[in-house]
Length: 396
Image (tube, rainbow, N blue to C red; front, side, top):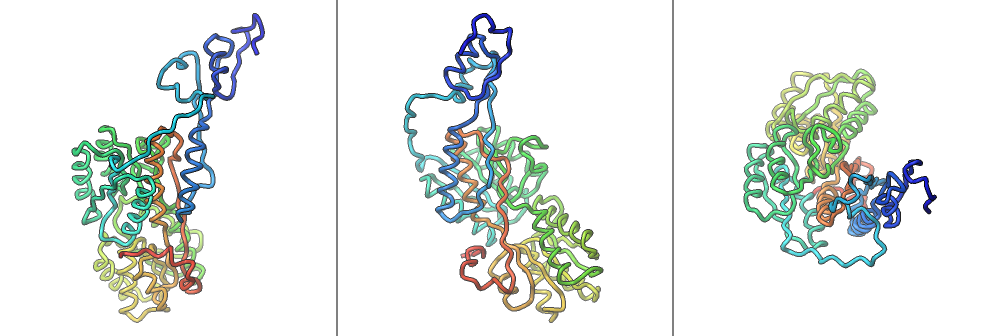
C-alpha cells in the first residue's frame, strides 16, 4: 500500500518480486525488491525426487536457491524479467529429445568406477530422452582428454558437457574453451582450480559433483589407527600429484595420521598403473618390515597394493584400507587380504551431473556449485549383505 507523500523519503526494501511489488519499485515507492527463485525450487524438487525414485540417493539435504535483487537500475533489463513472479498460467515447455547432445568424458576407461558412473549418466539421459555422446580417454592424462574435448567442441552440436578432469590446473584451458563456445560444464568426481566454483579460483563450471575426498582419506586412515594403535607405521599408495581427488585423499590420511599418532613412512605414485603400484608396494614392504598399514587412494593403486599383500603372504599381518569398491577389491576384502574398502557412488555422480545440465537448460540458476555424494564403507561384517551390493562397482 502506498503512503502519500513519502515515496523517496522513506527507503523501503520488499521481499518477493510479485508484479505488484515490482510496480512499486518502478514508480519509486520502494527502493529494493528481493526476488527468490520459486520456479527453481519446484524444478529441483521434482528432479531430485525423480532421482531418488530411480535409485540414485546422494541427494543434497539442503539446496539453497539464492536471490536476485531488483533495483531501479536493473528492473527493466529484459534478462531479469524471469525473476519476476507471474500469476499467469505457465506454458508447458517442449520435452527434451534426442536432438539435445550431452557429451560425457570420464577420467579414463576401462575403469569400473567410470563404467559405473556412465550407467548413471545414461540412466538420467534415458529419463530425459536426450543423447549421450561418450568419449573415453585411454589414460588418465590431460594430454589424452584435452584433444577429445577439443574435438567435441569443434563438432558444433554439443549442448552440455559432463566430465572428470584429469588435472586441477592443466584441465582448465580446454574446459574454458568449451565454456567460451557456449557449452556449460559440470565436473564429476574431480574438479579444477580449488573446487570452489562459487567464488574460488575457477567459477565457470556450473557444479562439482563428487565425494568429500579429504573426509574419505580421513575415514580410511582413522580405521587403520583403530586397528593398529598409536605409533604404527603406514604407507600410502597414490596416483600422482595434481589430481584433485587423490591429492585430497592423501591429505585426509595424513591428517588422520597426525591426529591419531600414526607415522606415514612413505608415499609412492603409480601413475594409475596397477602393475606399478604392485611393484612399489612389494618393494616398500620388503624394505620396511615394520610397516603394518597401507592406504591405497584409488582403484588401480588398490588393485596393485592388494596383489602385493596377497603375494607376500601378509594378509592379516598388514592392515589395508582401499579406496574404490571394484569387484577385485571387494574380493580382497572377502578373502581377508584387506580390512576396509571405501565405496564412492559414481553412478549417483553421473546421474546428478545430467540433472544439473538439464536444469540449466531449463533456465534454473540454483544448481548447487558443490554436491557431495558420500560413501559406503565395506567391512567383512557387511560385505555380503545383499542390500549393499549396489555400492560395488561393476566393469560389465
